[in-house]
Length: 405
Image (cartoon, rainbow, N blue to C red; front, side, top):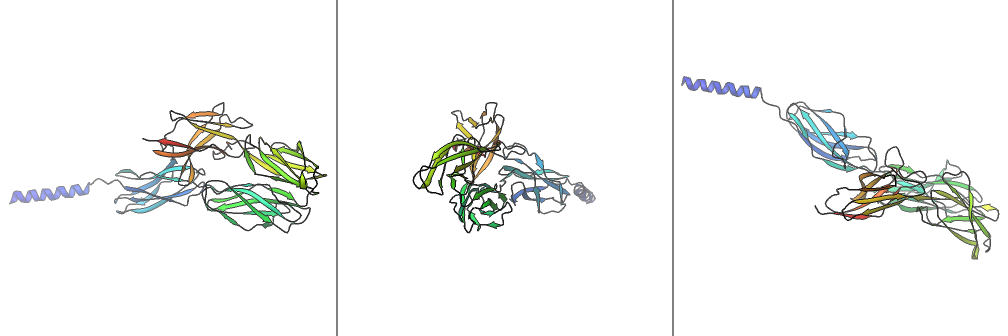
């Protein structure tokens, strides 16, 4: 009995010692959802279980295409409780229209626990392009432009007035969520004859607002100039057309052009009006250019034609990709983005730098299955407009990349 009592006392003593010196458990960590995604910021969430030991957490994040997390949020305390607590943090300094990877990381005396990886895409404010006015008379004009809603429902309107303070605007209209540019317009009435008006396009979505360039029109002119479209690709043509106020055939109309880096208009062609005083001319701008028409001693309102470089993309037999960019300037050493189409939106998958001949051959490993891809060159590389002065963003044709394993 005495021996049994000693053994029982010894067991009790050992049990107490084990409890006293118990090793802390590592924390539990679960990566949560992303909310409030904007072009350059996002809020990430998660949950942490300290398992009774003082615990800290942070979020790690970086480009989806990177194999490492290059940034972290500030370290915060999750307490020392024994249940899961919800936590969150704000990510800043992100690039618009870019895919990111993130995860929560929790630490305590028992160790470090990494949450699973989550993926999100930053949004982008709508891009807008004010176009030339058409249908100009003594008191009426149609204002034109292009809106790319960047995959978010977007509202737009035109501001207009006799100065760049504008003062009036057209009723707001809505463009459905889409990844492609949409042509928009609005008719304004009650204008004063022989008066110059300024106007611009404004668009807004949950990701922010964008304002187009200022354009002008003059009512009651002796010659009217219209453009069939506000932009083209390098090497392409845009039809310019219009009428003379007299409505007479046989009137000479002079076409003038001013490129983005020039300070004056220069005559480039002359055409003759046909029946009803109508005329047309096929322009081929090499970079962003303004055009005017002159006839009967008067000058039309200017129209601006924007230009995108030619971007090519080829999928080779060995599953490598070849891309190039061509324009009136050299695009050597500029950076392009390989984009994949996912969830109704174009996402940046890989950055590619062109060589000295403005070409690049590269490989990449896209998700298993069939993935639509394209190359893009534009302003979304911080610090440099990769499309170059005088050019809009450019896009290649869409190819289908197939990966079976």
